[in-house]
Length: 263
Image 1 (cartoon, one colour):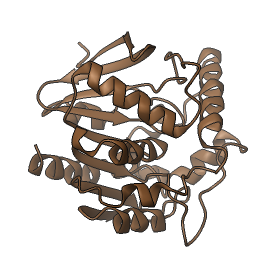
Image 2 (image 1 turned 180 degrees about the vertical axis):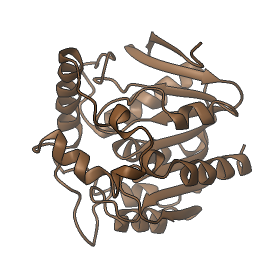
Image 3 (image 1 turned 90 degrees about the vertical axis):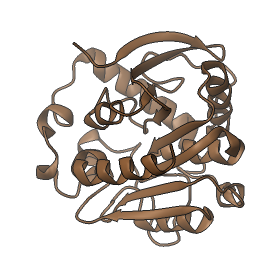
Image 4 (image 1 turned 60 degrees about the horizontal axis):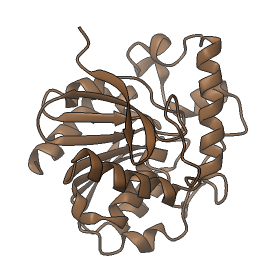
């Protein structure tokens, strides 16, 4: 039997595809630019201690996009409303890559709504050293090569990352990429005002980064650490942009230890 449910729910005026599993304090997990990856190992392990809410953002996968939602700030306002309607406040908020940027915007918008914040290789801040890689105008094969330091470290790499997509899945992937372009194109994957927004946010924050991230450079993690006064930066060696997949044990040990301290 599946250890989670998946359904379309009406929330904040939008049809939202939601995966939910576990019991305990709520953890809201925000996916990256490619859309929801499905119920992964880290969802399963988190759901052993928490109630995990893992939505597809408006405009991604089967979720609809309200006409007013065009920017990352709009998306943050949507989730503020959604958290209120779903009764998740206060919540542990976790975001991966673009979802990390979204989580940071939410934290800046309504700090009292959060018990804690986990940012994983998050976009959102323009690096001072290096650049955020181009991922929208290149093939998915190029993105896959950028994503991992060493794909052989990824358990079930072929099934999780490298399998042949069905025509329906490819259509969803193109739709997701279109939505990401709408949200992240200009300025490219960052908000120039975000460091200022984060000033004074005292939410306990864990920043996790793959040291060899070739998509969002480690310098962005250092800048998040500088902006968030109550933050810890944990750097994972020999790891790229997706530590939850490439170094799953170290990632989960770090995250669960942090969440346990703030539950």
